[in-house]
Image 1 (cartoon, helix red, strand yellow):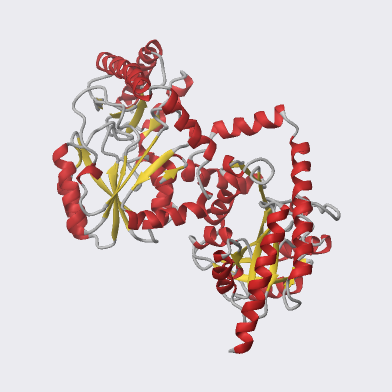
Image 2: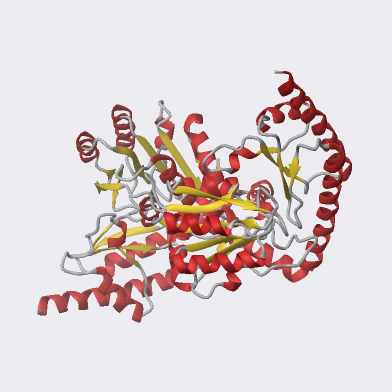
Length: 305
Length: 305
């Protein structure tokens, strides 16, 4: 089913799957606007810690064993927002095995999957799904234009029927003009070639940002090294609040998103998300340099107090 | 605020205003897809009877006196869907007076207001609003193109802030391309001239349908005579179920919407909605003729049994 961007897929999943007090399992941290979309339906968020392989399956299993009202597992397996991390193949298999065993649905949100710069492409969780448990969603926003608001949901026919009914109540249908525009673009131009150009630009920007971070940031700052997507994730010493860092950065025209908002149950104020996709390499180097200076100042202030 | 069609305005009003068990007052009957949009938020629907002047204010006052969890009054004052009726000026004034006295919000849904064929234009309820109680919504769907999904909400800044937050969670924003298309159309072409043509076509079709109904339908069928919009409303004898009539009509390629679905609390299966906007006059005459034959057959069957 075509959706009005993949954000609408999240709202519809809330409408279809969640009643007040139902459990939603998500990565910790997870996509900020997914939290906001689900919150309307008053669920209970259960956060599962991540490492470099994505959501930790031992913690997921424990959570599923101990919570009996879990309706779904929300995951962004490829170049996750906000961490940039990718779930390993082994964990994808484990995820679907657990979803089947505990009879919960999986919402696989994959807006960034086409933006892989390095490493091997991994199969979507949906491709491992044998019981119609995975609701897969993606969008043209990251490969064509976010302004066009055309995404899609792919799910088993029985559950798709419910999405169709709720979609009608939500906005009747997605703009037929927007759908025609996307269709015409794909027909007249080479989308794959376009995406391949985007990948090259983003890869250079990621490399540039990582190089600058290695050179400029103090050792006590850790960061992810994503194989694709738009984001990388910074963890500061626990004594530093990223919101304070942001205020100083904004004065020097450097912006990022403080990480606390990506945790539905709060905390983790010493984290932040950097986006490498939208600035030239020169400005990335300049920005990271300014930020490094501010981070060192912040640590000095903390050390003195 | 721009919305993805006015249907999204309804979903957002549900998100902003309604918790489970809250009361929504609506006209009886009311717009089918508003019922579906609100139902997601599990409210209690309180239907207020209508007459040729629109929602009855004496019944509204009684409902407000007796229900203490009413959050909003949903109304389509101009050429209502499904009845085609228009709320009189006196009742519009009374409505805002009651909303103020009982401190409830009013959702004024006005997709058809520009499509007036006869009679005097009446001021929107919003224009009588002195306390920021009216959330006014409209759309380009009925004056330009339904496929383009561009509508808007007009409300007091304090409540608009809430709509903006929920809008972001619902679809981030309305397609910028669609907004540019509408803007360009209004800039390059004469929208008022276009609407005036649409009005003429619809007026002729309304007149044609009413003339055919007067000539063809049996006396025991009553109907509204709208001054604009797209719809007229038929009431059959209580012994006839419009869903049965529909089955026979579909065999003769005549379609309408059975009225029962427009009553959130059910009943009224002897009613139906006709749409005069989308067929040529020849086909309208032919369709009403076939329908009249079927209605007479239905009455005969009932009389014999």
